[in-house]
Image (cartoon, rainbow, N blue to C red; front, side):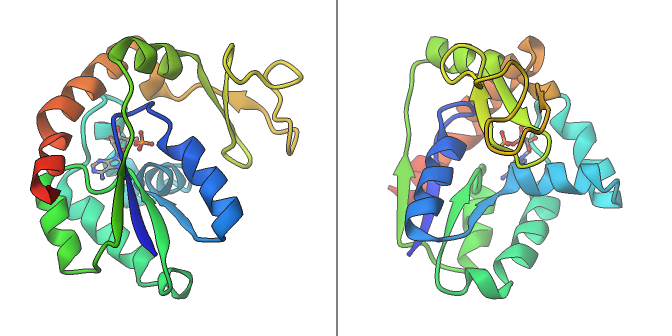
Length: 182
Ligand code: AMP
């Protein structure tokens, strides 16, 4: 199955994807994770993407679509995948049709106040990317990953100004993707 998980930032796509990946053994392809890996490796793509990500803006469609195509071309994606955070614009949805076809889209939904509470308390493991929340899903030991003992951190774009911008971007640029698929 080729599935896209859809919904606003902080709705839980990454958390559900990790659970689905463990059950169905499908690769979890998150464009946000791909960008964060590029930033960590300080590649040219990563440096360019960081300028947009830190502001809470979307990375331009051509950069994002090219990066995703390279990932979906890999062997492990040939029998299916869980796409998380793509497509985020109608242009990306159109471009995806030239790359592959989807079997299903799952749309997750939560009220803004829940989203803001989740994003502002979210913490990630520096080593394995596991997702925690300071009150909803706290690690057993403060700031330490339960699974690999890696240090937890807060994403720069999970800070208040960037959260506001990301929710606005979702409303104006990403929500129309739902109508496109309907
Ligand atoms: P995420 O981890 O899905 O919240 O993504 C983090 C950031 O990466 C987003 O706020 C965007 O700046 C960028 N990003 C991730 N996916 C996309 C996409 N499909 N199109 C454009 N930018 C993206």
